[in-house]
Image 1 (cartoon, rainbow, N blue to C red):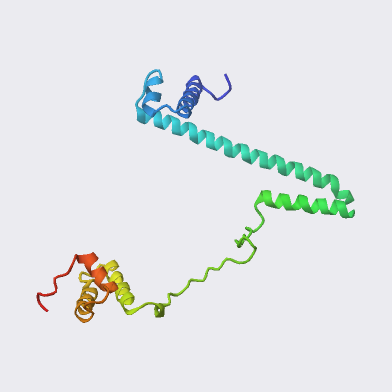
Image 2: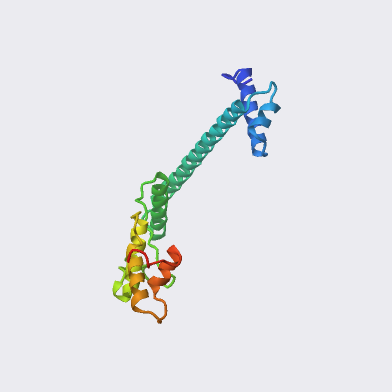
Length: 197
């Protein structure tokens, strides 16, 4: 038995590995808890799996750190081997590339700015366009105002539409239905304007 490890620690580690394997296979926490001897609750099975995952994440981090340190060691050895010939232009270029790689591994470089562009390489326009209300008719402007009031939660948001539709019904008899007359009918059905006017 390795020094510093008790039988209980080793069994606990085996249990975590077993639970992690079951979870990776798609077992539920209830199933994991029942498969242990002695069986445990699904909450305890969850904690065991989480502890195993935490250990795995820590191990991956430590492994990545070791690989990074090993790479730095290799680069340092290369730099030391090439240093006596540093006045040779090709060696100098290699030493510069080694230094750049070391700086990246240490995180010394400033973040690189990446600029998005169109497929043809031109800049992407981000300027917001202002609406041109001069292209709207009076009916469309009234409708836009009413819809804005509705979005703001104003109770009688359709008042302007109904008044304009009532006016259009009286003034444009025998002509095609106007936009606001049609919207008023859509919102309220066919309005009965004979009352109160």
